[in-house]
Every structure is written in C-alpha cells, then in structure tokens.
Image 1 (cartoon, rainbow, N blue to C red):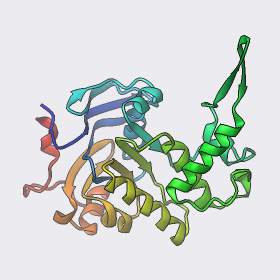
Image 2 (spheres, rainbow, N blue to C red):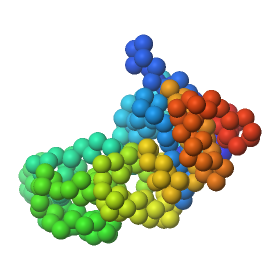
Image 3 (tube, rainbow, N blue to C red):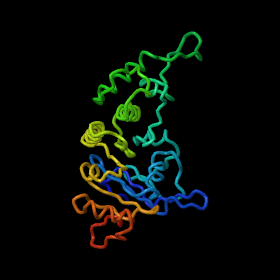
Image 4 (spheres, one colour):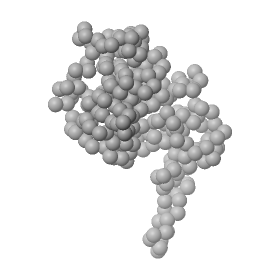
Length: 267
C-alpha cells in the first residue's frame, strides 16, 4: 500500500545495461509542497533513476506509484501528461537558435491555411508572445527573446531551460538535476528562488545536487544513494552534512537508530 503523504514513490527500481548493473534497488519519493534531495556520488544511480521516472528509459523491475496508484511511464510524453516535468543538467538547448525558438522546438504552434487543410504554417506571433509571457511570469532576466542562446550567460541558459520545461503550467512533480551547477552566486540564487516558489505553490520537487549547502537550505527529506542502491531516507532535521556525506562515500554503512525511513518503501 502507498504512503498517502507522498504524491510520488519509486520502489525497488532495477536497471542493467548488459552486464553493468546501474540500479539494484533504487527508491525515492516526493511530497507536495516539499523538496526531496536525491544525493550520491558519481555512479550512484541518481541519473538513471531520474531518467526512468521522466520516461527517458524503462526500468527492468520495480514500481512507480503516482497518487497512490501504480503507473507505467513509457515515454517522456507520458511522464509530462501525468504532471512530471524535468530540468536536466544537460540543458539540451540549440545554441544557434534564439530564445523563443528553443522554447518551442519540437512543439511548434501552427495555423491552418484554408481551404488546404493539410497546409500549416508556423504561428510565430503566438510563440513569441507566449515565450515572452512565460519568461516574465517566472521573473527571469532575459532582455531579448530574439537573442541567440550562444551569446547568453550560464544563468540565462539555465533560465531558458527552466522556462521551456515549465511552460504550460506548474507541474505536480518537478525534477531538477544539478540546476545550479557551474552558475555564479547570483544566478544560482535565482534558480533556488524559482525552486522555492514552485515548492511553495505545492509542487513536489526532487532535487539532485552535490551542493550540501543548497540541499540543507531547501530540502525537507534527503535520500542517499550509493552504488546503485538507496541506502537512506532521512528528515533534514534528523541528520547532518557530515552524516550524509559519510553515507554517500560508504564511511557510514547504514543507520540503525530508527531515523532511516527506507523501510517504509516495503509497505
């Protein structure tokens, strides 16, 4: 039975690529209005787990529950349709395209040209206006939506990726993969403010980050992965930076004093 407090749960997910086991027991969950930080060293399985949740690749086994019901997510479109949106560390922007072109690539708006029903043309006016409205709504500092991405700062590129992913309304679950990596202090602060805003609006956020300061600033729950397995799920107030780093590296094998909530995934 699902834990009713959580809108999303991934339980005992496994994934192998030939002889390489990427996930042997991946678990993570998310609660509306809170941030769950998913942390672990390189090769811990975080990215694979998130790619499965976002529909990028299938799991070999395990369960995904959304609002208490088991779901199958076989594509990124299916993930988005149930309210899961992802902002990847790899921003997937086209540098020679401008802002609004990047925001609508692959989902361009068109106008029917009667009487030839099959003839459609791009609705450039609507795409430009919608892109401008979205960027203004999010409060991003993008002075010109006609500028090419190649001329923009790291923070502006991250802002465009966020606007692209979140266009069309707030998600039920928002996955942010290293959103402040390689950003300056001011730019990182803007992304953290965006995360807090969506959290306060009721979104369940899964944050992947190596920045312990950010993790302890915004997260309510911290999920630790090591070598393809989830080894701990802890309330922020019940742990310390030193402890979670020890769990990540293996310096601390496990926690047996009742704080670790990982057993709840076996309900």
